[in-house]
Length: 288
Image: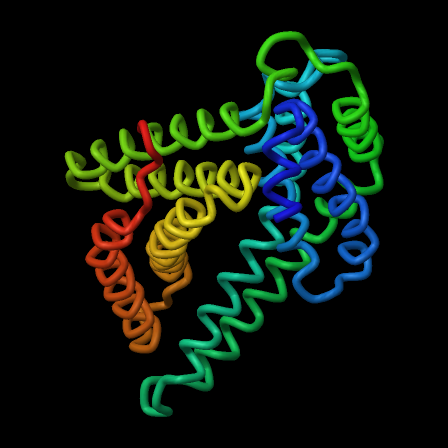
């Protein structure tokens, strides 16, 4: 398979630099779509920021250390992701709550509830939009793109960056598996309000592990798929928790709000029940 042979024979630094260049090109290409408010564009740009940031955090030692190095660039990606986050969260939360509200029977106050939530969504998106445009049209975004280009083009550091990619990528996968496993164990010990935060930490670790597997390529495909499944289950949990908190803040005491809140509690509980099985199915890397 050419793809597998390419990653095996190239140096670790070259493989990571190619991955960063691929994602940086996607980030650049998405900017016009975000400015034009094309559907899903903010979501795709935010995901690309997360993939890039995870790649730099995990593999930064394999890239050039100029102009602050990968760590400084990762910090800028966190800034951009945050600027996109409010708009994306409004989109997701608004769509979720409106979809559920439209499914309620009329006697639960459906029409008024849908109207209230639609107005809330419009207001939130109007508030979030200027932050997105300010981020893309200000000086930090083009500077970020230049920094990413420098990381891809600069001379590789000595040591592991110039060694074969296979062993280094496999080492990173093992490291991210162990990191996620530690958070799973911590979540198992957590009780009360801390349990929600602990599961959120597992989700973030699983996401980073998934992106590490994507960089590692076909040899880590089963691992990547397993971590994606964990991330998705816990993503449902996090979405339900946030929706529940939002509904409590929006509620005027109407029956429909109470119904929606109950649905969020039930969805969070289902996700918690499904999580252990999703984790059990993750392919443990050899040697981890």
